[in-house]
Amino acid sequence: MKIEAALIGYGRMGQMHAEAMRKSDQWNVVYICDKDPEARKRAREQWPASTQVTDNEDEIFNDPQVQVVGLYALADSRKEQIEKAVRHGKHFIAEKPVADTLEREWQTVELAEQSHCFSTVNLYLRNSWYHQAMKQFIDEGEIGELAILRICHMTPGLAPGEGHEYEGPAFHDCGMHYVDIARWYAGSEYHTWHAQALRMWSYKDPWWLQCHGTFENGVVFDITQGFVYGQLSKDQTHNSYTDIIGTKGIVRMTHDFKTAVVELHGVNRTVRLEHPFGGKNIDRLCQLMATSVEKGERDPHLPGLRDSAIASQYAWKFLEDAAQHALPCIGNLDTLEAIRERRKHMKNGYGLLRPAT
Ligand SMILES: NC(=O)c1ccc[n+]([C@@H]2O[C@H](COP(=O)([O-])OP(=O)(O)OC[C@H]3O[C@@H](n4cnc5c(N)ncnc54)[C@H](O)[C@@H]3O)[C@@H](O)[C@H]2O)c1
Image 1 (spheres, rainbow, N blue to C red):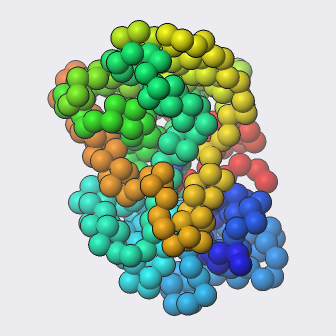
Image 2: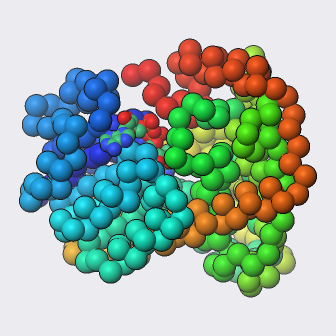
């Protein structure tokens, strides 16, 4: 028996989740809901008549057939949808962040943790083969004691004002993934930090931020994130890596969004792994959730709402810390306008919200 799923929000992420479910034999997508007529038109064209397309989320919550809801709209509607999911006894997969303010995020954590429904958040890096492989190597003791985490993700991605208006500046919207994965590796809570940011193109919010600091267990970290990386270069590129140093060895990875390369330099083994990048690993998230529902037992590998709220909280803290220091502006809004204009016409680009179908 397939699991009956209903998806709310059929934008970039909603479509990715829907496709992952379509390819799996564990799921049956029975509803797609979006408030935008264009998105509904797209859903109608892409799905058979047995999938109902609606603008009314209450149809979904009131339908006892629906077992799992996917919450892929923007952060401003998420808390209300989580409340409805819990009230109607639906399991749910949520996009991050789980609400549009920290206070509301923590309220959703409380709701989820008190409920019998299974819930998870798409903290997609945790489900990636490359982070799993590096973590396992570290856990085997191959690099000695974990000491230093260095994470960088800079792309010519989502520009300010293009969308995601409720998810915060780039370091919150995207950076919270890296804040989360550093904490996952450290196995400890953030302890001290110092952040430096820059208001690129003189936009009101910083679009690049670097933070370094410590975890309670003494592991140190630096995280760099920015959607500022050559937005107007003729041929765009990016720089994304994880570099982890232990007392005896190192592990590191990089990727070009198609292939990821992991290099493991341990005391006993040197290993080089090269596999398809795997995108947002939504197939894995969906599979973990489906198996949990089938077995009636929540898979502990599913990231929880608490993990998402903690990552969101520290991403905000690092932005606040950066605002206490010199926060220079470089460039001007005309350049930003040129970037938005370019991205509007791109068919294939970093983090486009609605790639041409
Ligand atoms: N986990 C990740 O790696 C990752 C990556 C990108 C985005 N996201 C998150 O996913 C969410 C969606 O992002 P996106 O890039 O798909 O944005 P998007 O703008 O492409 O899609 C959002 C869709 O939701 C619809 N929508 C908005 N409010 C709605 C409501 N109340 N009811 C029904 N539909 C509604 C919009 O019409 C739109 O079609 C964001 O919260 C974002 O933070 C997560």
